[in-house]
Length: 139
Image (cartoon, rainbow, N blue to C red; front, side, top):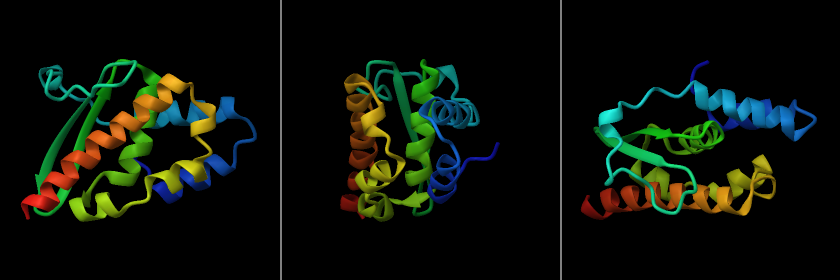
């Protein structure tokens, strides 16, 4: 499965009648993420505030930011795939401007996550926003 776009994800999730099927779809998205090398599992890449371990690495390709992510929890890898659909391969300015709250509302995601998973998701988004804002400020 290729990495999906936000529009594809929203469209695909609309087909499922229950959240059990949606969770399985989200897990499958996570399984399609590129594998992050263990050598990148370093303390500076580790996201604070997540119940599970989450690592984020960024690579610049001209103006575009490409993220490589990993987690030790399969559902969190799926959540990372949802975030990467919104932020991956975009410029720092596009990342900062993207309305992630609206996207999550359209997914109807936050009310189906435990409070700790929701906080972890916010920590992931905050980390990517910090990276993008640093690039915008440096430009």
